[in-house]
Amino acid sequence: MSASVVITNPLEDAGWNNRLASSPGHSFFHTSNWARVLHESYDYQPVYAAIIENDSLLALVPVMEVRSILTGRRGVALPFTDYCEPISTDERQLRAAMDSLREYGKDAGWKYIEFRGNNYFSDDVPSFGYYYGHSMSVAKDAAHLSTDMRDSTRRNIKKAIKSGVRVEIATSMEAMTAFYRLHGMTRRMHGLPPQPFSFFRNIHEYIIAENLGLIILASYKEKYISGAVYFHFSDQAFYKYGASDRNFQELRASNLVMWEAITWYSERGYRTFCFGRTDTDAAGLRQFKNGWGAEERIINYYRYAPANEHLLGTSEPSRERGYGIFTRMPLPLLLLAGRVIYRHMG
Image 1 (cartoon, rainbow, N blue to C red):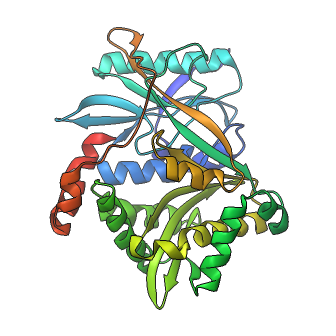
Image 2: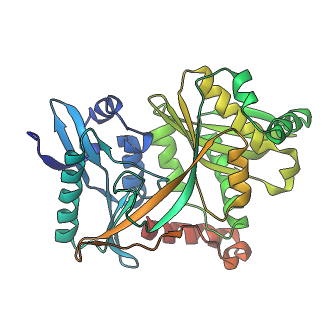
Image 3: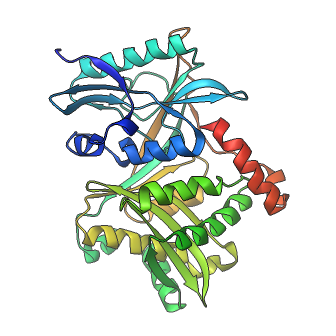
């Protein structure tokens, strides 16, 4: 192997995304735009182990360093990311990039490195936790997409339309603000504080405004009742955040929002559509995603302790746990909790 591993920062490489787009196995989460959001929002530092030769990306393991007085110093690939598989064209190159990160983590005093994806280790290595993932092909017309759905999904779309729910595709900051209101309501319902608004403002500035994402909102009688944020890169689309007003749940607006997104990406030549990760105990959300004809898989998370040179394996499901106190907390306090907590979580 002639090229060596370098620890690089995609924020300092103007040609990063162009190089990435020509690399097999890339995804939106490898982009410099997502790295910029994480860095600007929480001051996480990019530590990307890469092998680059003749301006081609032969291997990549992207990690952000999280420094916290509450949760310690560690590497995460990548924070607030459903999954982020490594890029490699050769097993030896991947191992070299991983070894470089292990040494970096040991020298930096990281508690562990968290890898989010299935291709970092062999199948027989125990994971620290896992989620469900769902994805589907959208390289087909609307009629074929509809045929792949469950009958109940088609009925819910028709019900939303018949009830007078309207959808709009937007990229404005006003649309992001409207979505954030719904996001706060949804997080509170689940007993979780919302991400700070600055995080979504950065998503708008570095992703939506850069034509790498969109916002879809559903309204009923001039009131926004559901919405979602989507990312896209190359020929891949990704459903990242969804929210709704539960008072209008019977209108099935979320189904219409998702259908609008799927058809929008299909009509513009995108190949795949990913629904993101799902907690193993979120039966309702899992059923919703399966209803579109998506293929279900397991997304494994691994934690490696550089100091002791071993994996922290539990093989237990991972889940985002809610707490009743947040469902009763006044909104200003809930927003404050989100601003304080999330930078320590990663």
